[in-house]
Length: 307
Image (cartoon, rainbow, N blue to C red; front, side):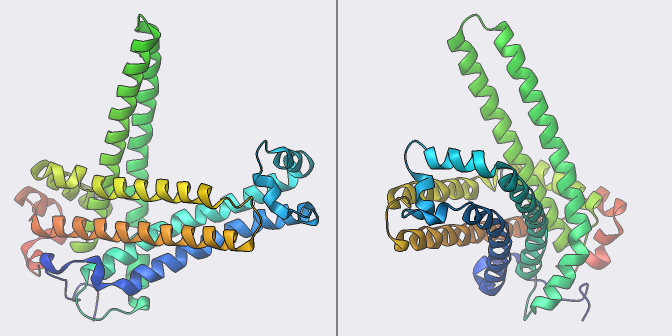
């Protein structure tokens, strides 16, 4: 069975709970890249000799950061090299995030049994489209950031008082942040359209813009609840990590923080899958306009009729 002939789920049936195995696969992939990136830095820290002290590397987390500053002074070049290697691994991890999104969208969109190999094959075929869509949205977000920075400068120059300048700057930052989130939401809708209707990047983006015109709340603001929930989870995890206090004696504290971090990652992936499911339902329930059908062979009635 080819990808074009594979049955697609009805919009009402699309749900992240239908594919827990693929959420687990995404979790494993992200965890592996994070672990590889962390091992390089942790190895350099251990080689610095901090472990020979009775307090071990917990000393790095003490108030005043005396041991941390001394470590940076003595092992700065080695840490910088390790950080560069870890950054390269994290970049690969970010690219793997495109693969994870493609796998999740493929699994969420497909009816019936779907093997990991089949999902990975389809995701690999979607990778160029996802990468190009991401690059276009990143370019738009960068232009938005540049515009916000220029507006900050104008606000500071034109404001009559420091208080009014701060208030205007906060308003500009809020608007810019919301617009950046809206662009990210539109990006996921375009990716969902690429999977659901088998579109190239150009036509997927046109489809997403068409959906945003007809359903702006869903296409541009649909990801906001999931983003807000994710931010609250991360904030809660940060507060819990501070309360556990890894600087205090006891290996159980480190294990508890590690477990907390993994649970946070898993929760964020579940939220991600939930939003992608919603994006798929959105593009599945909004038929393309006739004009868009004529510009994209993939949307002609002979193929769009498969649901």
